[in-house]
Length: 495
Image 1: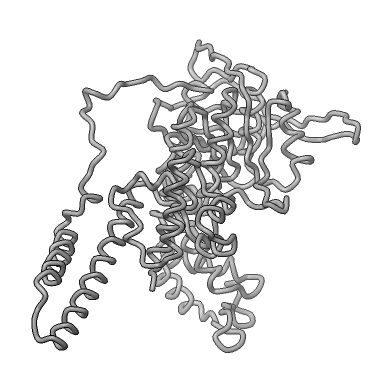
Image 2 (image 1 turned 90 degrees about the horizontal axis):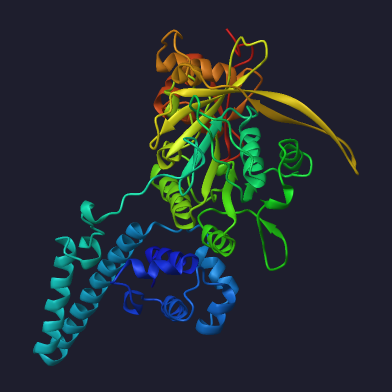
């Protein structure tokens, strides 16, 4: 019987056949299932004939006799690991199969000993070799675990960082635009897309500096369901050359139905598209969380980092600038670098991040593009901008939208803008009580939803339960083992 680990290995190879080169120890022998052996053989043959980025169902059917339904079953809920982790998967699977082989040989020899009353020297040698193989695994001597991609630093050629927008949007790297929902992130991304599409210069970040315009095509991956009403008008208002910008709303199934773009599966296909068109300079993913598969826990650091590393590898291999949009969480007491919603690995994986925040008390209602994090440049100043209404006529009627206007850079305390200080310190339990009062003031809510929102704010589960007990909150369940809801007793929603 095959293991779940076997399925994960095969699914990863279907989604990303190039992983077959990540481990020298992989072969048909490590699979116990005949189906998996046929799939592996088909993938190995496919890699020798054209090296496809992804194994499609037709090719698997032709070479391995695998149905589309079987491919769907195998890949359901799986994701592509980075090569190092895939090599570890293969190593563990080899260790698993070595254990099964040892057990099988030992049982067979025991049966033979009972029947004939003597030991077969050749079989005993096989058993000893199987034991040594397992001992090597346990001692960490498996070849797939001890090979390092190692280079002398003196042999690595250094290279300058190139920019689409000097010190802000680097080429060949990933940059993030963060901020609260509706704060202006998409307007900033649309403005950058428009400037690149028509070769317009970006605002200078340093005094007296002239930015070098860069012209090219843009791929804008958007979860906005109505680009006709929002994204396209914003791009036009920003002065974009619309013929140089393609909006990717998802992928198309064989039945021409729209499916969600999945960064863990579709980046190899997107890379192939980009490599076919040398004029593409920018890829925007807005927002990045919308394109994570449901199999990935948004707060699981290892899963998020592996997915984000695929985005970084895409930028590195294609040489384009990649801009990803992210939302703030609700906890303004956290450090600026920790304000991004979900796992901290969203922020850790990008090389630079800029936040869109309001400039409070400003009569012009300005926003600021504030440096949140940078691993590539010294970024101290912020860029103020205003959001201006814009109206134009089209054959379908008058279109009302908005565009941004940048002003000269200013020196401000970015940390104070993103995570204002001076708030009175309160205990975590007090924060949890305040959170529950706010969430339940209008009625009951699902316990799972409350736990998820509290975790996003850094409130631990045990702290939340202590606050629940302090406030006398009732936990009620719908049906046997049904969904759990929390609510205040009548008249106790607010103090």
